[in-house]
Amino acid sequence: MRADRSRGVDSASFSGHAAYAGATLMPVSDSEFYTAMLAEVHRARYRIMTSYIRLRPAAYFLSFTDAKTSRAAAAYFNAIVAWSEAPGRRSVRRVIATPNEEMMAWAQQLAKAAAEHPNYRIRVIDWPLAADAVNFAIFDDTVAFLAFTTGTTQQLSGFRIDEPTFVRGAIGHFEQLWLAGRELE
Image (cartoon, rainbow, N blue to C red; front, side):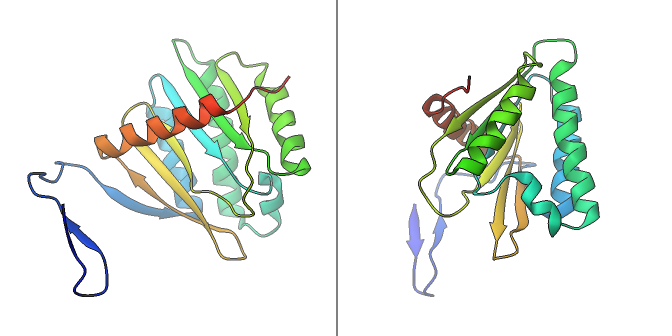
């Protein structure tokens, strides 16, 4: 790898690595984000892995999220539960950060609901930072979504990435979070 810093910005070139044919990095935001993930839920064959590492539960954001995004998010989250119940070997795993009592209460509520769905599991992790993490959703071994919250309004922006090496890296990172987490009783 050779870095060119002559313009004040790090840009890297990788010798010997061709661009992956068909790999994409597609920006998505707000309702587009949830609509794109909903489409991947319907395409998923065997596993979905998601993280929710934020300081506030999802319901908090409803007061300033537009109706279209709220509907798209609800459809996505409901579809994941329904997908976990379809026939075949399926797994939904969700990591939730519990940096405060509000998030712990929300995680306990979700874990109780998930207990009714044997293919849907939740683990919690401690989160010591006063900031949201980059969150992600991974569908099978084919596509990952990264979610960023921005500014004081907590607007959602993100990317859909289907580059195989990146998706494998995202899976590895998720597995680290999963193993560091604990199940709620």
